[in-house]
Length: 115
Image 1 (cartoon, helix red, strand yellow):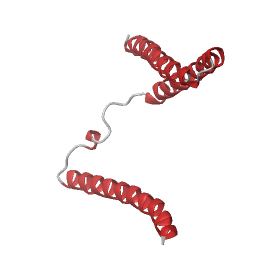
Image 2 (cartoon, one colour; image 1 turned 120 degrees about the vertical axis):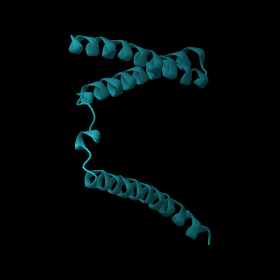
Image 3 (tube, one colour; image 1 turned 180 degrees about the horizontal axis):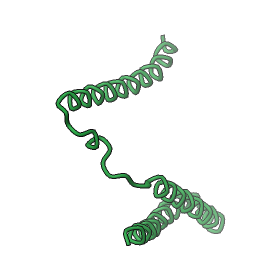
């Protein structure tokens, strides 16, 4: 009986994720069809065009770079002080620091593009 519950938990999780995605996409489609039937402009769906792909890759890259630097510093500190608890704090500190740096760089790029 225990094996049955071990198998049903992952299955129910994936069914739940599928159900949420299905309901979201189905209701979005119905909402769009209702707006189109009332002759509302389709540009409402898309908003302003931006090149967000560059900014997302910059965000993910800076997070992973900060994560790697933090992990390296954490392992060095753990080796020096013989405590494994020194691994996590530099990980979060450097990840946050590189996200702040990424925010400043992204803001400068957006200001440069708007000029």
